[in-house]
Image (cartoon, rainbow, N blue to C red):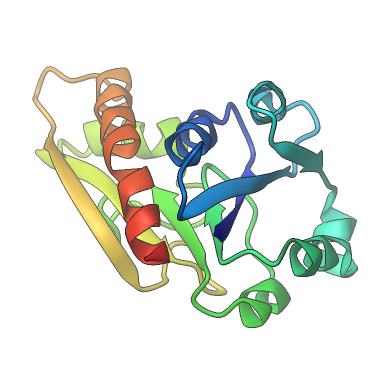
Length: 187
């Protein structure tokens, strides 16, 4: 049985989707959710779905080995960043090589980097009058959104689309593709 640990910072819709997708699967399951936000909705979602969930602070994440030790004890086969907003520490990436992935709400390398998340990305896409966007699932390295690309899915951006319209399209792509890509990586 493959073990998945999810990191999230916000509402946790991708985390919930992954937990539900892998519930009662024989090949993998989400064993833990970790967040840097003690008020994140992802904690409630995980609790309702009976998955261990913990929050941590910046010191535990970057200055000590507290979060690293949690991961060592959890023995994840894959660490999935699903709306996690902090830069991932090199010590964790080194400890789990090619086992940390992220989902980004744009077609990288466009619209990546520090501060490019959520509505910031969608607003930039609409402002720049892009005619397509999508999602990118990629490995995590020591730079924001620069790891090797695993998968991309595209959608059209219409002239009449608002940033919220783009966000809705991206959300659909995430719900459809993210669990399948995670499953494929684990098999």
